[in-house]
Length: 333
DNA sequence: CCTGGGTTTCCTGCTT
DNA sequence: CAAGCAGGAAACCCAG
Image (cartoon, rainbow, N blue to C red):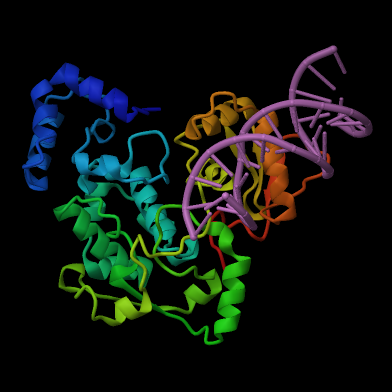
C-alpha cells in the first residue's frame, strides 16, 4: 500500500523541497498556481515508483479549519486539489457530499466514479448528469467550486445551492420520519432537512449557481433556511458516531486494511479482524487513549436497541447493520 | 442550569 | 483460562 498520511507528506515534502511547501502555504496563491507548483513538485518527486497522487501537500490552509470527518486520518481529499485526487479520494468527496447533504448512497452511483481526480476534473456537466442523474449537477457544481476556489466554506458543500422538492406532502409524516431517523446525522454541519432515501429517490434536485444566489430572497432560502448557525442540528456531540466510524472503515478498506471486513456485504454483516486496533483508532478519534474493544463493544451493544445493529448470535466479533443504519449498502433502495 | 443523546467506564455473570 | 458477549448502572461530555 502506498498510504502516506498528511503529516508524512508534509515532512516528505519538507525534505524534498522546503520552498515548495512554503509556496503552497502562501495564501495569496491562486489554485492554478498551486497546481503548477504541485506539478513541479511532481516532476522532482523522490522516485518514480512513488505515487504522486499520494504525495500532495495541503493546497490550502483554509481547509485546516474544516471539520470534515468522512476521511478520518489520512491525506484528506479536501487537502489537495481535485486534479490530484485518487480514486479513493474521489469517493471520499462523494461520500462527503452525501453526508453533508443528507443524500442517500444510491443517489450517487459510486461505480460510475471509479476514476481519479484528473479524470473527474475532465468530466463535463453532461457526463456528470449521465453518471449520477440529477445529483450529477450537484457534483459538477461542487467540483467546479473546489477546482477554482478551493475554499472550505462552511456551506459550500451544502444545500444553499440545492433545492430538494419531495413528494412527501404530509408534514406530520415528515416530522415523524425525522424523529425516527435522526441517526444519520453525520455531524458535518449539515444544513439540509433529513431525507428518507426513498423520499429522496423521488426527489427533484435543481441547481442554482452559488455565486448568483441572493442571500435572502430565493426559493432556496425558503426551502432550505438553514445556515450552519441556524440549523437545528440533531445531537451529535463529538462528530461521527461510532457506527458511522465503523461503517466508514468498512467502506474504505484500502485506508485501514485488515481491521474489519464484510462477512456478508448484502446483509450488512461484518466482522472485526483487529478489534483492539479498531478500538484504538476509535479512541484516537475521540482523544481517548484508554479506549478498548471491551468499551467499544458496549457502545456497539447499545445500538441493538436502537436497531442500528442487529445481534448475530454465536459468532464472536460479528455484527450486522440494522434498519436504522444508513449508508452502508451498495445500492440502497 | 437543565435535559437528553451518545457514549464511556465499570461491573457481574455467562459463553465460546 | 482468555477473550468475548450481554446488559445494568452510573458517570461523563456536549449541544440545545
